[in-house]
Image (cartoon, rainbow, N blue to C red; front, top):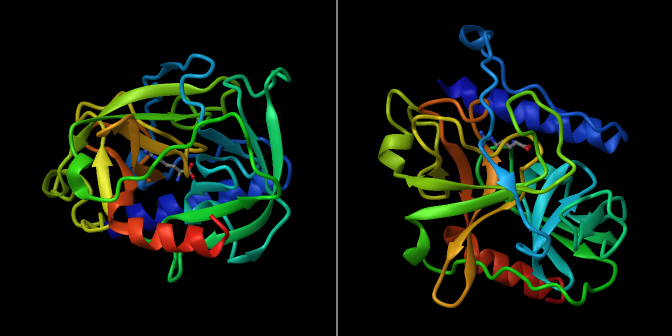
Length: 268
Ligand code: ARG
């Protein structure tokens, strides 16, 4: 089953490359031989209300992100290139409708910080620094302990609404239940491919609700002590919303110290 991970990662990379080329196209989901009859499970989301998740960011390479601070967007390592100056990314914020010009903020990047040691497996987080600070939008605090790494989470994004489907104009949201590492890594699921310490799974085992291609880098969050707290970053999965294959998310609490230091090194 090790190939699930690599296949999905490759699909994500291909997707990012295509999006950078200016074409809006959802990557085909990972296609393993035994899954050529891809069932188009709708990723059971509903539309988010304008202003409901003010920290949501759409990135021009076709990923999501979350506003960590006025100048920094937390996303997935697999959405970006290497660490260094980078003015090629446009972040869109402030709207659920990407085509609405009223209230829409578009800002360029000026630097990318990719998790050190990222090699396509694990360490799937990155910070993008914006050329100018965004004002008037609230940020999403990250989980700094495992206290909120269970329960029911919310995910949101402009990615595909079904496996193999198109990117979305309107922000979609869904609720997904926590899935333990032992179940997620079990023989009828990812069978050891999940890095238990650094990844957290979520999604109904019956399928039908999940993040999908183009949601990568976006946040998974829940109610914390005071308001919402980010517990995950959309990372990978076997297709989308398939039974027994929950979404796999970067476990933010595990990387919180590293994210906080990196953010400080980027100027906050
Ligand atoms: N890697 C995908 C992307 O680049 C996200 C996949 C999430 N898949 C899932 N089944 N939850 O957008």
